[in-house]
Length: 463
Image (tube, rainbow, N blue to C red; front, top):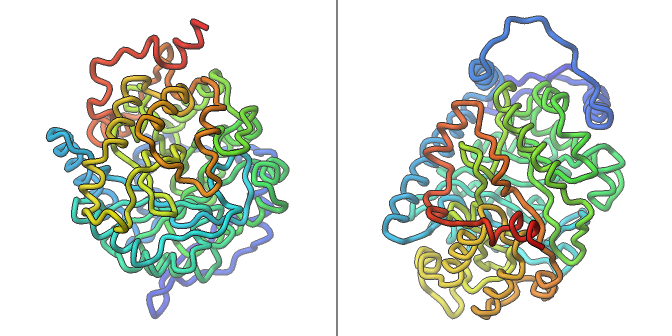
């Protein structure tokens, strides 16, 4: 497949050579639909880290690469270091914040917990800037921008342009990434879109609740790559797409397309229509972990994993305090699927600085304590009963527009998550393992904990 190459034209914008768009789309569609094997190339086997370095140096825009390395890499590492220092003082302010800036979305995905069909709510630019400034004062530089569909926010790129010293990852379906928006992201240089692909044409339409979803998503990927933007592709793994996308051929196709990183989320049965029949079986979850570890050791593409440390032990980013979530109404939540909040980024009734709201939140502290004591996995999936008791003990308000989150939690049953103490798979790539040792681990949250009777594997085995 022909890859569009970028150069720089007068005025600082990327000059894009002509590309056969139909050929691009047809090839990518076939890759998702049938995952046709890529043509084998005869070459001397080169270590994966050298092939990754070559890709980064040869394929990435150098200006954007510098912003990524400095803002996300160097300053992001300092953010984690400050987090570890705060933990020694008994204080938790997450170094990585995920901000849902809007609840609206053009799709209606299965199992979505966001109130996409309700009256639109957005985080206003003034509130967003205040949030980012106060987080920067604590040392934060990385923000995940989620929704709804973030590109439906009327001021999205204008807001991000105000903070060139930060780095933003936008979780998007790609439908609103036009060539013009892609070029602006390239000019800003501090943005990476993470575009979701959920399977073949048929599976995508089923999963996303609309027709023609895949082709529009591929067009968004096409536009971002043509503009030279550092681009990622993610998938929420479930039973209907795991056989299509959890394959080496799909990774190869992403590399050929020019995608620099990918992320395999795991489907969570949440919201008013949870669709638990889509959940991975324990065997499929183990297959996914095996696949990620193997591909990290052999493919020149970054594969993100937020569920395990370098030794293969499960963890929950909210329980360890490395990340929390801000909802579209400004509520501060442990993570996007824990839709209860006692504090808000807004000053109405509580004008404390953002740092104090995080550090002094009894609800957030008790959530982290309960989650760490119960399981190394996801407490929402494994012990919704205990989480419900915690919410009730704090009288934590339902942070959703539909106001049914507590009933939804009560209706959930115990199921396994990423925690599998009998099959812990360490990283095979030494660079991932080393990076996680310093920058992504449990930070001592699970020290001395015995989860044999409280976590889902033990509970289900004894039932």
